[in-house]
Length: 219
Length: 219
DNA sequence: AATTTCTTACGTGTTTCACGTAAAGATTCA
DNA sequence: TGAATCTTTACGTGAAACACGTAAGAAATT
Image (cartoon, rainbow over all chains, first blue to last red; front, side, top):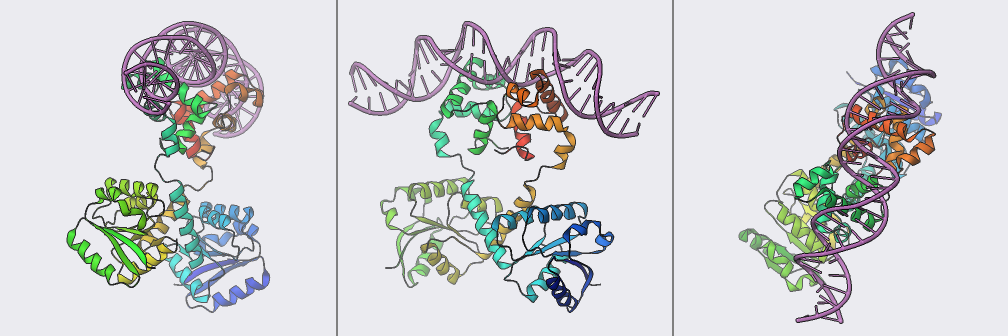
């Protein structure tokens, strides 16, 4: 029993080309050949397909939206994006949208076959350039959201203020904080007032956000 | 002019072994050989070293803390972690802590040399198993924090409640919300009360967190 | 037609916010 | 060492927000 795939590509010649390529592959069966992504969700045989190859020219909001709908409405269907679009942000968004694989323009026939078998085995597949992009992105994310409280915040707030902010940010009421720190409610209020003034915050909501941004509390 | 490295390893035989290995390498000069990570920060010649190889048995909080201090106090010094510890969480934390490279136990002599030259050129270096781990982690992170408002939240809250929550989460006071939505302050309060009840939240802080978690507002 | 949900709004008492004032203790700096 | 500054503590007051109930008309659903 082979892998049942669908192809969708607005460029008709590319669609034909991909069809011949896939048709020539051992164990691959093409069940759907469509040139309009917008039609996909109406296709009745979608649940018979294992892997849907989407080949958009540009990764626009429309494609992302279709990808989300496909993956949400048909959880078993795996979407493989095949695109020469090199926009880093939108590539990341396709993965967020639920695509299980991505082949950039550096991929050849063997990569495609490998991707199809990898997806069929339940794993994600990203071509080399995409893998590097993801890694680069992740490392920089990791380093910026380092998970350590920023020195800026610690320098700005006194240790007592930090204590109050931490407790308050962890859903304690002023009264609970006063009991835990053995101070009066008025003192708790004073500390919070001082924090708001120091950081020039408008509302209590802003104070929560500050605490989250600075890794003082968790979301 | 070669690469000046330091080695730190609590296991004395491993320290000796690493020293001989590095000493035998072309273009590598070992300036520091220490068996106690706690001493590192006191070493006066730290700024002459290009790469510090840290070889901890376990990636504990003490090692992470030292890594943070080293990278913050000596920005030019590059920390290369060499550890057999396979705890995914702590491996990620070393990178957050500022380590520029990580060699897992699947690395050999050539990987070490490659890592040293890669770091010297200003790039990060992670061995293959670490790269895979990072990628796996990133993909799952991407997919969970998908950036789309969760259906759960949208189903639970009415559209009016969502409006109020969004405005409030964006630092509007109840009075400002009432003006923008052309309703009374009391109605704004009512909506917020209903949200708290529906979601079984204790404090206003929890409501902010809910809104952030569900991508209704940004931190 | 009956029921539920949504939106609107008020009453009352408590809690928190905003802005001052203030004093004892710790820290720092000249 | 003495003066200046910062930190922590705390109260007063009026405004704003929260907690919990009640409630009624509109809209959607059954």
